[in-house]
Image (cartoon, rainbow, N blue to C red):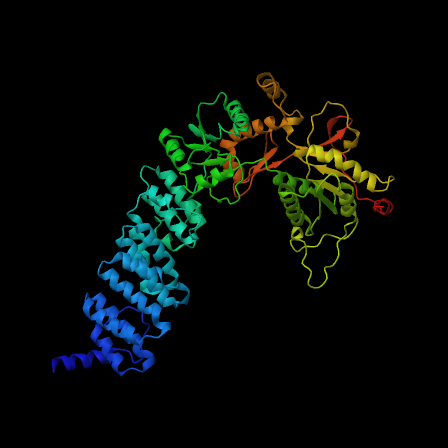
Length: 598
């Protein structure tokens, strides 16, 4: 009688319609099974699943296994994944971890409902935790997080935090990889910062600010110390490092280039009280190298040079300000990270800005049909569109044999409306070039290509026409003071002021110490020199102070920490480079008519 009354009382509290089969179990297995006996066939399976789960939660494995066996006898194919989940839970409850892993691996996750997926991820997390893989278990719970809501979601967060809080900072950073989701990386990076020992409070503070800037809406942000989300509290004082760690490939195939940069850094560092330590990155794991840097007590990192090393070091979230000597494909906008490179793409963008300032409105970009040429052309086009709202005209050359045909095709190119169904060239990014005749040329070519191509532009166009204003960047540089090359007359080139005599005393010293240095070596020397000289000015420049003169150009820094260079423009005249003063004017109608290709 007592059992009957008790069961009846509890049955009144059970919902009439079956809840989700993976909702929290609040009643006994017997009560759920009783509901299954009176439920419609569509709901009976759900009530039985809940009964099995309730028994397992109560450690009544025998009852759970018996009921599961009954379900398996009458199951339809669509129910098979659910039964596999229940079998896996039985295996976990009875500590049969290999069997649980086998069962879970065999489930096709694509056929699971959101509730079943949530349960699947929970079982995987339970298995991995039992197998002493807490970070992998946390990853499963992180993936599960968006499938939950309310108290369940908060409980899930607390379990993730508990799993990761017990791990070392090093193991968390080692778990960072390209296959992780943004949510997983956010958790790993934050907990690596919070779990680190020996980090100076100020460095830890800006690490946390940097994390918050990268992951402002991340669910783990509730575990940040109070005040970290207040951007106004993040102070960017000028850097006055006492020990600078310089990371360069000092051995291997890039040793010569690295040596030029090292000499530039050392020259700029003369007379300073801070200490320089050089680290060879060739064949070195960045994680172990960073540990060496920390052990030396360095408080600023200059480098690395190679893009892959920059990205590897960034994945470690170094608690030291850094000026990298290249621009990686993917960079992180963080308060204490800076990037300085001599990329051809950046020079192409500088050419687009300068040509716009010179009054040109219809430029032709003529570039080699290779990866570098297309990247430079695309960067020019991007900056040109920002200035004008229109795309530049892009054309490519492939070989000496086809150069005349390539030039003719480029000069005849006129913007046309695309026919229905025709896709616009990717270079134009969906923006059509402006109408009208070409009034200038940017050539993304090297010195040899430039000398070979320029006469073809003169030949293809009418001989009465004045040469179109033609612009190139440092790849087309040739030393001045040599035998005149008439085909280059009136060519305008952008390069470092350093190569045009901006620092004669320093150049004299360099020529005395390194008499065999060529233009490439001198550019890398200048990169190292300017990078070292910029360190105390980085924060002021990032906050908008006036650009400063350097060997590599007039230097400023974007909001993202990227060093930007305004180059010096020179004009080739009779064997030497001279300052270009005259601004080209828009061509009049008569000249425009003459400029049409024959």
